[in-house]
Image 1 (tube, rainbow, N blue to C red):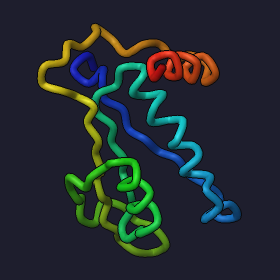
Image 2 (cartoon, rainbow, N blue to C red):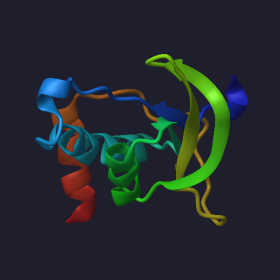
Image 3 (tube, rainbow, N blue to C red):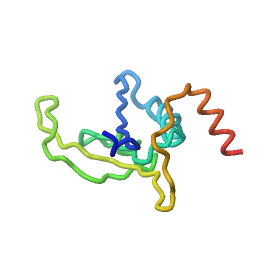
Length: 118
């Protein structure tokens, strides 16, 4: 819907064989600047709770818990709560474009970001 054009939900899943190896952090190190560069203003992550490593990862990137959906998921034979984490890039005085920028190659985005930072 048009009203949610500048909002995106983040979901990444890393195989248990690759947990605690920095894979998720490396993905987010590229994904967060990419989404900001494209013009997204609100990022959301949905995390099954409890999940301390995932919560810490999202908090590391500036996301804050904004809500909990109790008993929203059924996993491993149990009802689980789901946490909603959010990060806003919106500033009150900021003018927004009609739509976020279309997806570009990661190398193009990184070059654009480096140019903006220079």
